[in-house]
Amino acid sequence: MLSPVSDDFRPLSVVLAGGGTAGHVEPAMAVADALRELDPSVRITALGTERGLETRLVPDRGYDLELIVPVPLPRRLTGDLIRLPVRVRRAVRQTRAVFDNVEADVVIGFGGYVALPAYLAARRGPLRRRRIPVVIHEANARAGLANRVGARGAQRVLSAVSDSGLRRAEVVGVPVRGSITSLDRTALRHEARAHYGFDDDALVLLVFGGSQGAVSLNNAVSAAANDLAAAGVSVLHAHGPKNSVELPGRTPGAEPDAPRYVALPYLDRMDLAYAAADIAVCRSGAMTVAEVSAVGLPAIYVPLPIGNGEQRLNALPVVDAGGGVIVADRDLTGETLARMVIEIMADSDRLAAMTSAAALSGHPDAARQVAQVALDVAREQRSQKRSTPR
Image 1: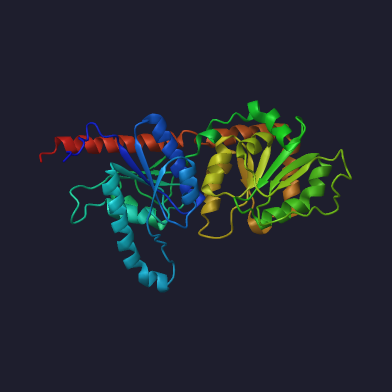
Image 2 (image 1 turned 60 degrees about the vertical axis):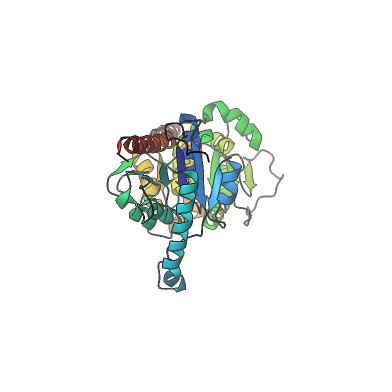
């Protein structure tokens, strides 16, 4: 029978708990890439559920995925709340089995459906000989319930912004994939403009509302189309795969010299979209704000008008630094949007200042910082194990 491999020779094993939505999965994958850069031998395992985006995103990025039952946290007294304890116990058992199988040295939690079971499973249970250290990253301006619970016993707590509601939180920003943080918008500008059919000297507005689009953004931008065209502003508009855009009074091909309005269901090359644009109109989810500021693109942020107001708080640090402005969804009309965009585009000094401020407020090294913290915690844990008498 083979004896277990000594910790001195076994690669570090990191478990990422951040399934469910892109806002949880994308930061986890950015940290996974950074871990590999810092330590190519590291073993990386992602936790997820069968109904989350991670079932596609994680394997596509080349990482191992282990599935557990989802543990959504109901906000009201429903059947789901009554079933919650049973579901949590089952998820914790499944997660502990994953930890044992991969010999986890550290857990990095990003919130979401799989985070709470991971935090509970990492604690010293009745049959566990050791506790697995936890590093938490909170991407939103207001911490979710799972991360608030997990932070109480975490070794390190990291956050995108200050005042996230988590004690001892260290501000590092939101982890963003390397293809975005390394983007040189100026160098890629000509290629990006050619890709979408814009002139090199065009003024380009980028509009996107997340993977599914945003109806209120679509309505406002299409209503503003004629005013934007009259001011010489071209538009690159990702309206969402289930939506369409109608431009009033504009017949395709009837005005060959008019600024282009490029409407697409989605953008499969966000790097080119960011490089082609001078300013963006977008929501202010944590990942959106992180990417837009990381590439130094000024933006008009329109927070999603649901939840506890965290989208507005996500954008505030960038706005306060001068890299963007906020307009409430209820106030977004074609007239309002056209006026704001045209005023900014017409003032080259203001646009340049906003561009610089957006870049300075970004955190392009967030993924590397989170990865380094996790590796440090894992190595410290191993060191303590070696020095503890058996």
